Image (cartoon, rainbow, N blue to C red; front, side, top):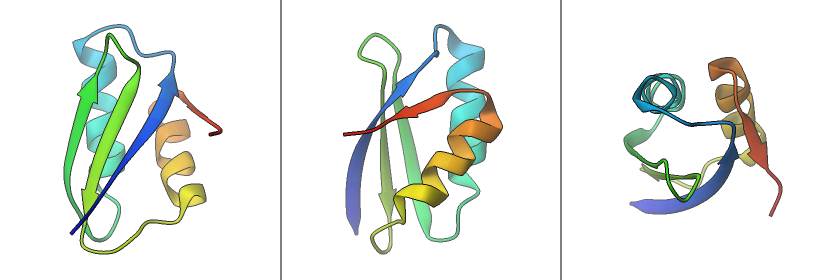
Length: 69
């Protein structure tokens, strides 16, 4: 298992978090998605390392922005 934390801009409520969890959770190999609204972070646990662009596309689909590290 691999756990990676990403900074996401634009999330402000439970609905926001739910949208991100749904989209990122649909990525192949993702086993858990945890959102920290106050910190603007999303922690993704997956079977293998994820391609950042795949995560970015899922976050974009949810309507938010993945911040470059």
